[in-house]
Length: 418
Image 1 (cartoon, rainbow, N blue to C red):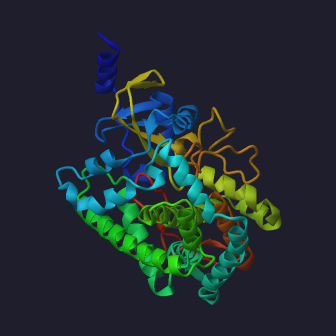
Image 2 (image 1 turned 120 degrees about the vertical axis):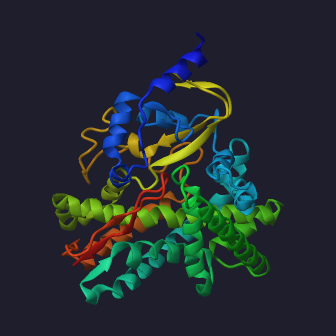
């Protein structure tokens, strides 16, 4: 029996772990622990892809050039028997973004995208974030209660990134809706989901609308540049003599990434703090701990618990033979709770140090907006705790965790009182 036959036999005899079970979507960490201990490089036949749950394997995979970030095959597979033309706009645009590019193509796109993150631009973000956070809290402060999701976290990142990009106010609500529609399909819904056609249609339409708006803004900034990110990126592309038609996918990537993950990090962080009142008090008494607290929030309840890669060649991970073309889910959330890397990983500790979590996915695809994300979270939580010192769960309303996605972990509703 050869290596491949042995791998297939092992797969046929293995246990199935249901990552989409309601209890796993609510709290996946016990299941991650079980998988890490029993089968850290696991092939899930129902999903049709491999799942890595150990820190060492996940970190190595994030840096492994034998794994491609182009997820086109996975998106098509998600459709099942549906016509691939359902997502023709989605595939065309997403496949051109740097998130889907490998070396060497990724290098130039990343270098150009960095032109939107100048020191001057970063310095201007602080006042944008602070003013936007205060404005949203002004709307609810007199009520004594709020939904962290609908009143704050879904709105805040969209408003901030829209202002940084110079998106007209009339289009900002559309931008948030399009980001959610794209993220719902992009986020690996449960295989065989009865809603997959709806998710696909909405994502494809959102990409089409998104692209049209970005192209319009690029043309306006080409004629009359400003200091917003689209202007900076447009100038950078023109200086390099590049086709501006290649810019919309990069803008869409930054806009969506900035919106979706931060929108989940805020309620995940509030939930963690309220479930650990001693840590909440510690942060309230010592606001200087905010940066360390943000890193622990990201580690403890990672908003993007999985990223996907595709094997460009046959390879071996953790003793398992993985064939070329295989889809691999890298468990960032599971890795961030690996006791081989973190002492007492199940403990939420805002003074944890060192804290080498994988929440920003190290490697060539390391989160482009990491400076913005950290700044946004630090200002948001500092302002929230200063203005609403008596923060607590609303006993009359139930929190609703999101339950449609493997890639994104957050809440659809998190009611609180103050």
